[in-house]
Image 1: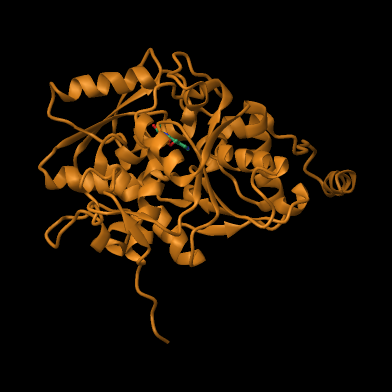
Image 2: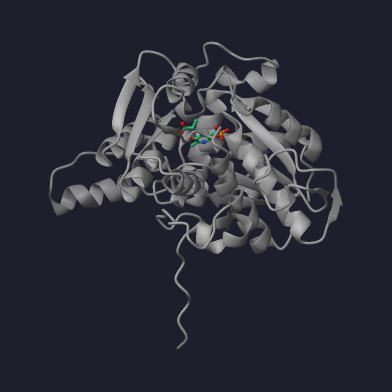
Amino acid sequence: MPFRSRYTGLIEAYRDRLPVNDDTRIISLGEGNTPLIKLSNIPAHLGKKVDIYVKYEGLNPTGSFKDRGMTMAVTKAVEEGSEAIICASTGNTSAAAAAYAARAGITAFVLIPDGKIALGKLAQAMMHGAVVIQIKGNFDDGMRLVKEVADHAPVTIVNSINPYRLQGQKTAAFEIMEELGRAPDYHCLPVGNAGNITAHWIGYCEYSSASGDHVTGACTFCDGHCRYADGAIVGNRPRMLGYQAAGSAPFMRGEMVDNPDTVATAIRIGHPQSWDMAWKVKEESGGWFDECTDEVILAAQKLLAEKEGIFCEPASATSLAGAMMDIQSGKIPEGSSIVCTLTGHGLKDPDAAIKQSTSPMVTIDADLESVKRAILDNMS
Ligand code: F0G
């Protein structure tokens, strides 16, 4: 029987579309190639005829989409001779930075908001041996400090302001195009710093260009890193929909927010780093931004877990929460195909899950009678 070739990560998979050469030492954990799962119960639950797919990025090696960007950022940092990387993080970036630094044999410094990151993410950063610096401030304070300190210390920033991060993250769009054979009508993402929505748009534009779609103007996103820097594209691309948590929604306010707050701690960001680019993505794609309350975000997280068997963290559920809201209102019409990115795994934040769970949990004596009774009492 012929063997399937071994998957060795997204840089190898998309080598010709990424800024690496034959001599580059690739730092990979086998990231990418995540499942695109078609929801089978939620459309009927909504009473709408739509095709909803979720791109389950929680199945990356450290449990979030950050691995796509981090394999590129750390590969390039090592190639450029860097011995240390640094990031500010609401949790997932720190977990990915810590893991890829460990793999590369370099040091990771991570600045996190004191007491405001999910437990799983903190455990990852600590376990991989990062230097964890908790700051008495929020992510935006951390980001400001990281930018300042990088001018004074020999460290490479691996937040999404590092252009290689977006280059790695754009590959999620390639995978979706390859699997669906065309762009979805709508692509929904949770928005924090707005790096990921920008990266996806770069990916769709490049893919569309490579497929021979009409080319106009210059690519305004990639800073000359992409193969299509000389020509951006009009063609088979989705409308990009960016959803924010209501307490942390600068794109909805039209200005920076100083004290963001939400249960979706991963997107508790008031000063997005990719502000201008995200507005451009919205304009170019004909998409929109919207916001969801914490209540609606948690309800979507729970619905996905209960109706589809898919567990994502609260921030990730914002994409589905927003999509459901717009499907219900008719803003996303019936007949549409929709991809929602589920950015991080539910196991990242067990506290948030347990706190909202209504699953029956009973404690009984360890005998057959008690178990039988527990089953009969809870048959639905
Ligand atoms: N979803 C999750 C699970 C995230 O961790 C993040 C960002 C986002 C969505 C938003 O993506 O910033 O590209 O718009 N987390 C960063 C971090 C800020 O530090 O882990 P974005």
